[in-house]
Image 1 (cartoon, one colour):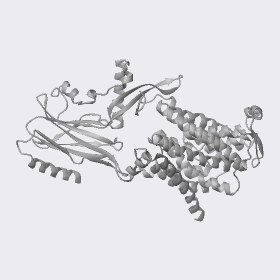
Image 2: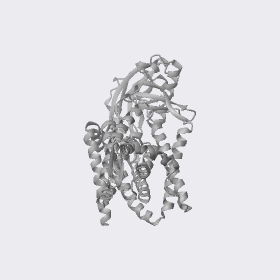
Image 3: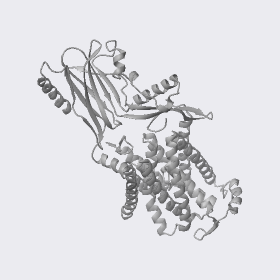
Image 4: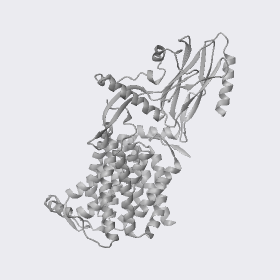
Length: 306
Length: 250
């Protein structure tokens, strides 16, 4: 059964959309990640125009992260002060990101930038995760990150505008969470992701937040940043397809419930290893597409340019 | 099938209604509106008509015009394929098909094909005015690429379709619209060609349009974009919280 999507302007099988939503939802239930990094490339492979894939996926992430954010908030796992500082950065970053997206689209470079961002970020994160899960599987746990982190630690301390974050037991420059938030905001706008996969490590290794508040605070930021991306992509680029979002949300909700149950039965290290392998697989696929000689060197875009 | 039967009946009526001394060419479509609904999976329209006297029938389906930028990828930094050069064409028909009772040949001289834009090689695709200085070889390469990409999208027919003669006077053909058909106002031109001349021609308009819920959503998203964005967020929030509530109870 096919459905014609009003904004994407293509006809897609309903069960395929529900299945994709459920599949990615299940993975996010198992691994506790948002799944945007998988869904946006899948939508693009399916033939949904890149802006619609990004805008609509942002809309879906609002749905998939809102209940988690609320649950963490109720349990007091959100550092609100940190969340707000991150959010200010996130709103600035995502607003700039949507504008950048529009400019890149006009210049004909949006597809290559999306793919390159995925390759760089997924490659880095996937690689680090893979190394770490190998280490923890071999039970030779080496605490802390690589040496580079120590070096960065030095100039962090020199930054002005220090603020005390009681909940996180930190006294650090507000510029740090602001820039982390801004970077994640830009990524959310350009890659159609929540950005948890970059924000969670950044909160732990760069900001030094305690793990108990990391997930809740990052979900808090993700809900509002993806809502901002949804709004701006709808308002400026007409790139949010409510119908597409609806099918993805329905599939995602069901999948996430199944995933949580499956995830609870799998051991943590293996889970992380699997997730790392998947992140690397998406990265490799996108990387190969960038480097391999295209079937047709020419492509069409309607309107604009000359 | 039902459409065809209705159309066939119409053809008979049409034939009866046309006196022998009437115009040499009469043609019509089984429908003048292609409705894109939620379940749209492409559509076939029947084009039928009658001719008086001898000649070949040529049909040109011409979609709404748009500005199209053609971009060419180049290997950049020795590694990545990036869009580099681009050429913009104006007044490009978004959709284009040609059908004929006879394979195009000498009976249809180039001058006629050019005048009536019969065949992709005779399409008038003007360059954007800002590109007047571009070399002809380069312009031709981009033009060919435009037509090739449009064909692979299914917007331009890969070859000339067939108009079949049902009798000495009656003809019919099918216009096939794929699921990704561009919306807008189309024209369907029917020519009766004899002795290397167009004896008679008829132009029929055709509309391809989103209908119903689909049209409502599209209008909402484009006319009231800000409100649409807020509604999208609201739906997502409610769906997320609602689902959570349901599953916690169950």
